[in-house]
Length: 189
Ligand code: SF4
Ligand code: SF4
Image (tube, rainbow, N blue to C red; front, side, top):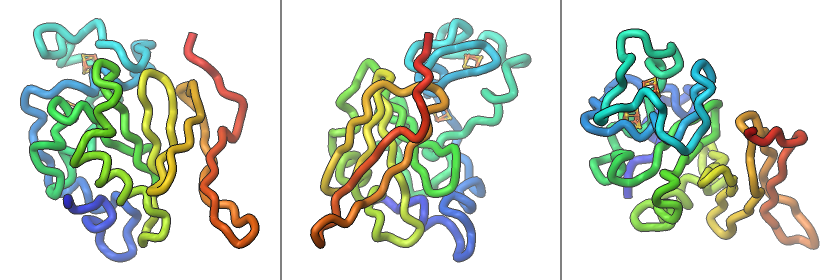
């Protein structure tokens, strides 16, 4: 199995604090230009940016700050090998906060996250009993699934600012995974 983001963090750091020491070059990958939102361009997730041409950015010198600042975990995590490269795995792994792993799936391959070795590793990362537990969010074609080792909780359509609460409820001595949107969901226009 691959090293986990947590294992790459030094003790006392947040889950992803040590990831940016060794950046791999993106090479021919440009999948983040498809799957992510770019607020400055009003670019919606899941479709290629209009500035993506011939596999490259046609406004490279003047691209929005958020584009230049973005680095997915494949570039940052030495333990994620070639099979995890986003243009091969069809998965862009990143985070917007401590203890959350976002997996943006290429809409052209919506089942990619269920293939191996990805599915098994994602469930390992989703284990809330691990040190520095992660909330693993799978986003596919605008729909959100919260992954647990023993369950997938589908929350349906998600907006760009959808906020999630998830964890376990203890009912009758049994732990049951739950996930819900915290606020009303603003859907993309
Ligand atoms: S998805 Fe990752 S590897 Fe691919 S272009 Fe974006 S930052 Fe680079
Ligand atoms: S502006 Fe350039 S770097 Fe940013 S999403 Fe579009 S093509 Fe990619």
